[in-house]
Structure formats: C-alpha cells, structure tokens
Image (cartoon, rainbow, N blue to C red; front, side):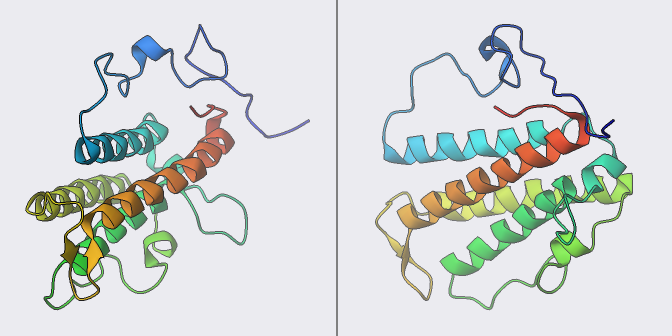
Length: 186
C-alpha cells in the first residue's frame, strides 16, 4: 500500500504529457518569433506560463505542501521565490540602492509559506507585479549587448539567466506537482 498518488494526465494523444498539444496554451501554432530578443522573450513567457500551469487547480494547502524533509520547497514557495528573484534582477540593472526583499532574509520566501488562500493570492499578485516591473525596466534596453548596472551585466545574459531560473524551477514544480496529485509534467 502506498500513499503516493497515481500518475494522471489530461492528454489523450500522448499519455506522458500534461495536455494534448492542441490544448496547450504555450503552443501558439504560428511561426516562431523573429529575432533573438523576441525568441528569448517567448521562452521566458512560456516558462512563466508553465509554472502557473503547474500550480493551477490546487488549493492553498496543496500549494504550501513541502517536498521532502529537510527541504522547505513547495509550489507556493516557488511563486514567492520567483517574485523575489524578479525583484533582485532589477537590482542588477540599475545603479540605485537595492530594493528591499519582499519576504525577508535568506529562504524566507520558502520558510514563511503558510497554507492560507489570502497569502497565495498575495504571492500571485507579487509575482505578476515583479515580472511586469522587471519586463518594463528591461524594455528600456532593447540592445542585448548593452551592459547594465554596477556589474555591467549584458541584457542578453540577464535574459538567459531569467529563462534558466524559470526552467530549473519548472523542473522542481514538475516533481512537486506529481507528489501532490500524480499529474505529470510536460
């Protein structure tokens, strides 16, 4: 006897996928973006959407459920962490004093998670706000080779790092979601 949920999927064509390709909101069906910046933005958009898909349909308790001890990782914590990271990236691209942390010191984004719907709603709002603010700040710098901030980080490097951060955490989200209700990743 096991308490592990059975694997499941909504897909009917490819049973190892999250959804059928025609039902996947990440599949535009149109041509690929034209140009390097548009391609990077498309990848970032799709990974952001993937994270939201991994969280959809879960209640506050499920979102706050920790992976395995001693880890404090949860889907809710990932939402908060990525909001924190978006804010931190803005610190990299300007010369002003750093913006304060959203949730407190190191690992507070994960450690401070509580299974309350109002907190979940606030985390989604924080993430959307921080993503929009970082997107707006970078939109002022369309030259991918332009160095930004005190460290002179190129826009291209920042964009690739953002994609990498979301991609890595979408992998975590795959495993977390499968542990919660058996839904497989894609």
